[in-house]
Image (tube, rainbow, N blue to C red):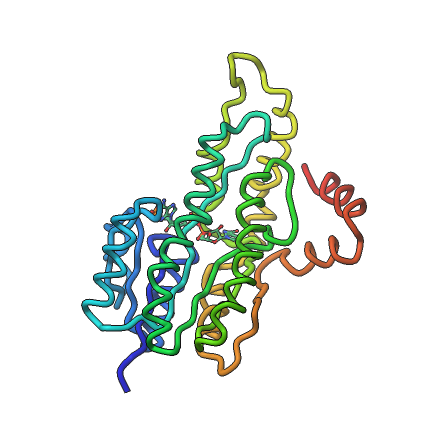
Length: 274
Ligand SMILES: NC(=O)c1ccc[n+]([C@@H]2O[C@H](COP(=O)([O-])OP(=O)(O)OC[C@H]3O[C@@H](n4cnc5c(N)ncnc54)[C@H](OP(=O)(O)O)[C@@H]3O)[C@@H](O)[C@H]2O)c1
C-alpha cells in the first residue's frame, strides 16, 4: 500500500520538527513547511517547503506542490504558531491582528485549500495544534489565548462539518513543551517603556518572565516528542478522539479551572507567579 501523505506546518522547530520526523520514521511521506527552509533540510525523510503561513501565494503553492507530487493529502498538521504576550493596553492592534493571521487565519486558509481534495478522496485527518491555553488563560496572554480559544471553537465546528465526508478533525492541547516558543514569545513582548514612559504592567511582565524562565519550570517542561507521539496516535487511530491533552501542567491547570472555577483559578495563577 502507498504511504500516507502528510503536510506539517511549523516543521522547522519544536513540536512541528518532532512531528515531521516521527511521521516520516513511521512510514508517512512527509512535507514540512516553514519560513526557515534551511532548518527543514536537516530532518531525515522530510521534504522541505518554503511557506510563510500568512502569505496566500506561498500557502497555495505548498498545497499545489504536495498534490502535484502525490495526487493526494491524507494528513494536515496545522502546527505553525507563536505567542504574542503583553498587556492588552500595550499590544498594538496591528500586532494583535498578526497574531490572528499566524495562529488562526493562516491555518484556516491552508485548511480551506486542502478540504476539497480530502472531500474528493472521502478521507483525511486535519490536526489542529491548539494549547492548554485554548482552555485556560495566563496573565498578559490575552491575544495568544484569544487565538487558541478561537481555534478550539473553530475546530469543533469544522469537525461536525467534515464528519459526513469521512474527514476527521482532531485538536491537540499541549501543556508546557520545551521548544523555542518561550524565546519567540520574549522577542514579541512590548518594550518596558512604550510611549517613552515606564509601563504600568512592568511588574507583572517581570513576574511572568521570571516564572517562565524558572529552571525548575524549564526542566519539568515536556519534550516535543511527547506531542509528536500523541499526534501519531491520533492520525493512526481507527476512531481518534476529538481532543488530546498532553504535556507538563496541561491536565492540572485545566482541572483547576474546571473544578475550582475562575475565582480559584485567578488566585492560584497569581500565587504561582514568582
Ligand atoms: N511550546 C509550548 O509550550 C506550547 C504549548 C502549547 C501549544 N503550543 C503550540 O505549538 C505550536 C508549535 O510551537 P512550538 O512550541 O513548537 O514553538 P517553536 O519551536 O517556536 O516553533 C514554531 C514553529 O512555527 C513556525 N512559524 C511561526 N510563524 C510562522 C509563520 N508566519 N509562517 C510559517 N511558519 C511559522 C516556525 O517556523 P519559521 O519561524 O521557520 O517559519 C516554527 O517552525 C504552536 O502553535 C504553539 O502555539 C506550544
